[in-house]
Length: 460
Image: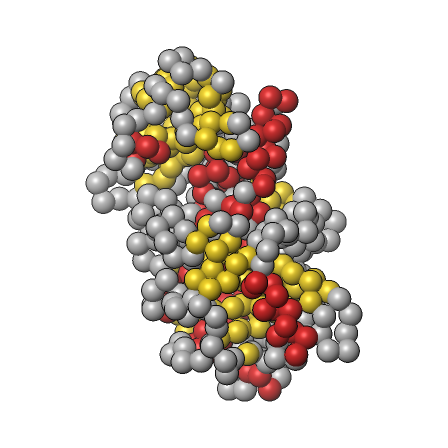
């Protein structure tokens, strides 16, 4: 463990380790605590809208009854297997009743729809199911229902700048200066401890976050951060903000990215303050490839579908409205062998190939080979195909890590020998470390669902 301590520090210093870009990247093919409940999901309280004049016309008296999403497992399912990651509370605070203040810019044709989405989304069964489990056993640090803001949404009368810089690491940020100015002038309503400013920038604006550009291939479509502001007549306070880029003009892409950021801003709001809320433990080497490849360790990151099958998308409904949103990680489902991304399908059998604990990150020299065992498990009867690929190979380049599997087809309980060879020097991860991610992929037929398990080789 000690030999990787510096690597964890390197990864923690990168933007994806604190700011959730993973589920809101531009690589999507179609647009990124509970008060009770049971394993696999929960829908506790009915809830009604709170707030006043800013939401005139919104059905503030409507309640929504949600059905529990508890999975049923037959005897013997799933087989014993290596554990999926857990996202745990790191003592950095949460937003107990998040309140979204929508900020749009002149000429935005979706402004009213985005305001309605922001009012709806944290009142839905999607939100109740997704936040289930993000609450300490003592009833503290619980992420609850959102509130429809008593604060007004903001429709700016002056255009956004062509570009901004931002930082999660204390670097230069013209965007934070902009937010501070708008709060100080009264253009943005004064925040409280639950406020999220949701800034929907036009496609003509670009943002560079700690050297990473928005909307380019491999760039981000959204992230969340925090900054200190001082409202008129008030005192200096920290506020959370979500940035949603308009890489395309579709409403679905905007709401997908926004839902990812709202969920992670609520569970891990204090980015930039060296405080983690709900986040995957950063000292577990088996979690490291998940955080590296999926862009972070927050509740939306681990559900990002890098296979491009749109399996990270679902629909949230409120009244007659339906919105495209992201799926969110469930610790309970991950521990039980059910689909860890909620809401889960009521009909699909979940399946994957899990490495034995302690082998998620391997260290080896170029030319060296290591082997370990992985176990196939599923939530019901199923036979599926497995394969492995490293990141370079998946991108059409020569493989840096060669991975062999002792089987190509498996069922629940089957053991597979995984043989890993480091063929050549991998790219730098920073801080003097080099490494190459690879994937164990499970697929149910050519056009069926597929799941993956991120892995990592670090060069000696």
